[in-house]
Amino acid sequence: LVDKCIGSRIHIIMKNDKEMVGTLLGFDDFVNMLLEDVTETENTPEGRRITKLDQILLNGNNITM
Image 1 (cartoon, helix red, strand yellow):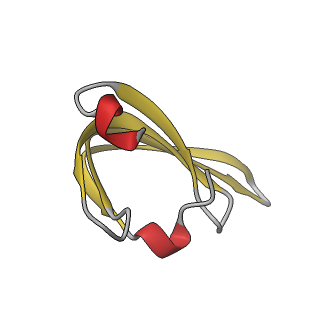
Image 2 (cartoon, rainbow, N blue to C red):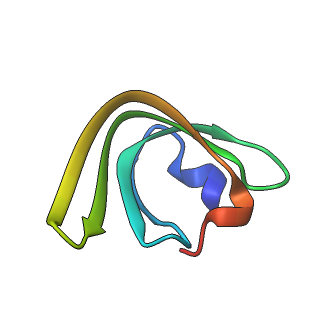
Image 3 (tube, rainbow, N blue to C red):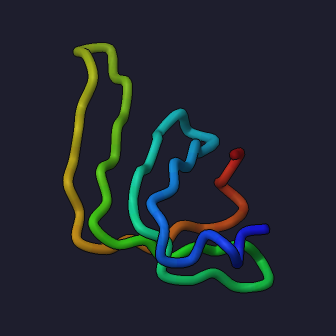
C-alpha cells in the first residue's frame, strides 16, 4: 500500500505527537520514510509550532499512522 504513495503528498503522525506532511520519495523494509517539501507541526505548551523542511528521513519505529 505504501509503495503506491511514492510521489504523493502524505500525512504522517509520529509517536511524539508531531505531524508531518510531505511528498514521499521512498521507504524501506522497516518503513523508514524519506519525505521532501515537508511541513512539521508540533503542539507545545506555548502553542502550535510549524517548521518547513526541504527533506527529512523518518524512523519507522516512531511512525504511528
